[in-house]
Length: 549
Image 1 (cartoon, rainbow, N blue to C red):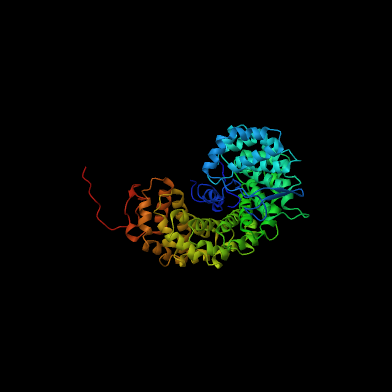
Image 2: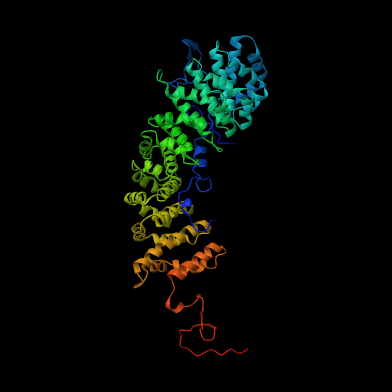
């Protein structure tokens, strides 16, 4: 299933070309989305607490259009209670289908309570009872808003189940019903509609697109969040932000024209202080900025929002990890853009803040940070200098030496990009920070692409060492490679089954590591001008060997 959420309201090309240096996000090398969105699941189920701003479990009334609906406190149901109600489900269905308003409401409340339990709500049994079409009818009962609200709550919890459960809601017209309720005069009903649409859109890209194509669902959601005349309560802001994030997420991605209008709203939500709102608005922006369009128009639309880049940097230092992760992902996505877009993200100077995430205990954050830095070092020499000035090179080298392989790979990209796109002094600085031994250690990995990345970086480094030697002295960088065991690894790579690695390692050995005793070995033999025969070892004074046939 596509990103399901259940949460209670209480809860190989040759070498490495320039196009590869700045790398868009992909699900093979970057796995944070899956892990963290399992923590922030895409469906929510309401528990038995009435959706009042106080979130008071003893609330005994619901104000609808100025009317106060009295309700006695209802204890949570246990498994025995659920079993008894399922045994009498025919009576509840009859009550829902009857003409007595009080009995209809009572039976609907009982269905809602059954589906609001913590574990294993009996969604399948409720669907099989055939009550869903009748509950859908209640969504249009504008004159019985208490019943309308309870029915919406019940259907929302049905949609929080499996894809099959959500499908039942969709096939009975749930999307259009809830889109219409986004304009309900009652705030509680509007909030319930937001919740239901969030569950439906969070089930799959197909249902997300159906929601976005129905009426003007996104604009109605924006109106709820960005209404100058009424300020929505915090629970509504939280749920609407989460719903909006579900409108933006998923692959294939939503049509950008259908979600573009939410970007200014997300920029405003990013200025809130509530951790839940910040988490979901950051995730929404991370989905938008995961941009594969020509010209990175989505990234451009985000960075044009005043103050958004600076705010994302500030949130990197948020005390809540759930906020830090999507903030970092959004920053990382933005710097996959072109040089100008990357510079817009760098202008508020996020790199010192990345020092904290690069050295934190959480592996996923270290990996994400290395990936982000690698896209900065794929930029201009000036952007590379910003990375150096932020003192990010020493921890990057440390990651390359000591971290787990999937994190090391991202650090290797970051350092390799400096050797290809930076100045000669940038590469010399890398060498001074012990980058050569760290990179040579990566040559022993089994990843063909990564070995090529490292070989290209070593080639760039050794080329500068050769230039500095100026033909009059030893290549000191080649000496460093030999001292850390890199020469032995290069010699072993001559036997690598991958032809590109074999060819690259042979060339490096010939270019930078020819020793005196190996002079002439592996080189094309000279031709004797008098005899026209190959003259092996022509410069060596020795007796002509005699061959016995």
